Image (tube, rainbow, N blue to C red; front, side, top):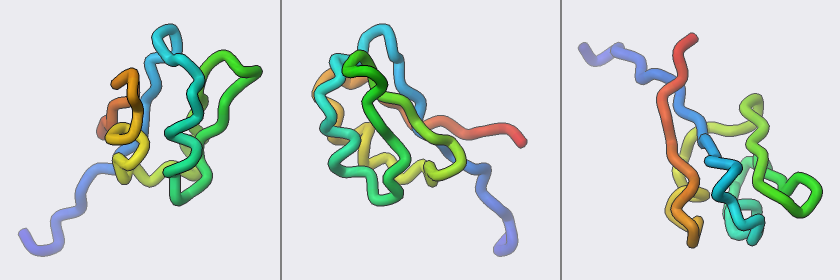
Length: 70
């Protein structure tokens, strides 16, 4: 059990509710989030490590961290 690997996690943005405030962009240590055309946040899944900092910082609570199936 000590070698059990945890499933990868990624940030998911509910784009239709995102207010494009940029708080998530500022706290992402991997620079995996950007604001697309001033409308909503977009996550680069290749860079996101699922740390959860963006979800904690989001004032609109529209970012969740979910396990990704490979």
